Image (cartoon, one colour):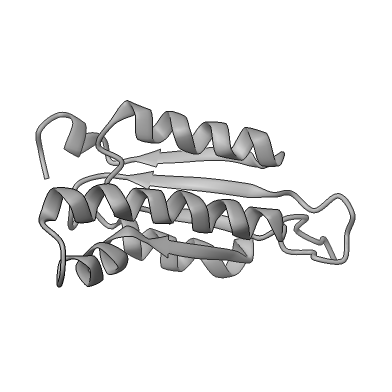
Length: 124
């Protein structure tokens, strides 16, 4: 029986992942994250959930910016505990993707990015 190293938590060679999902709202990021998380033994950070909570007391721009800062802090803390992380957010800016890649590199995690190509072309 083959063992997937991403799931085998007893192996010292377990692969570590930081995955950023980027795309427009409704493009399937959360659905993909939900499907990937169990097989990768990953924790999902939902940008939308945190931003929605912050919008109760902050303007949209402030809530969006603070949500990313909270996300980076939580991702860093989870990675320090050797948890795989899936960042489920729109990632509209290159600096957001760059920061995720830097965070993964600093923690010794593989960096994966899944981008909704239609969003980049102006589509859905």
